[in-house]
Length: 127
Image (cartoon, rainbow, N blue to C red; front, side):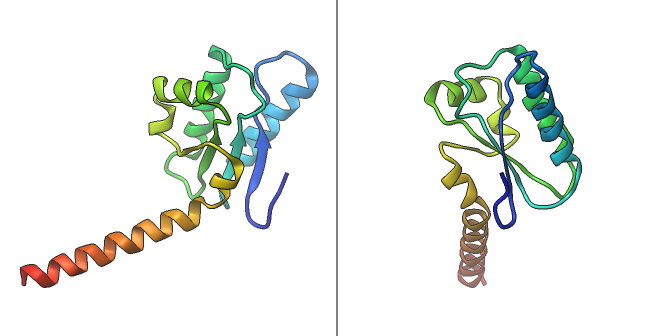
């Protein structure tokens, strides 16, 4: 699914069906092209296995050092914990819902401007 400037893709999981293999290819293809963030929605996955973790790590590797971001939507506490334990959450942002992920660039921009204001204010005090 595409929004105005982001791509939202359901996580295909590790099933061997041809349809899911196609989704995996679509996911990796979306990450090869620089542009707006790609949101990977894991909320429909009941559980993740080692093949799923490998695919998530491959997604992160695809965007490392490039002008594109991958955002993950955990969708459940179990998935969020698994992303924390595997440290994927330290490599890419993880959200609880697609709505939160869609707001990500705005939240990041607000945090950057707050940090700049704080450092400017601190600079005034130390001068």
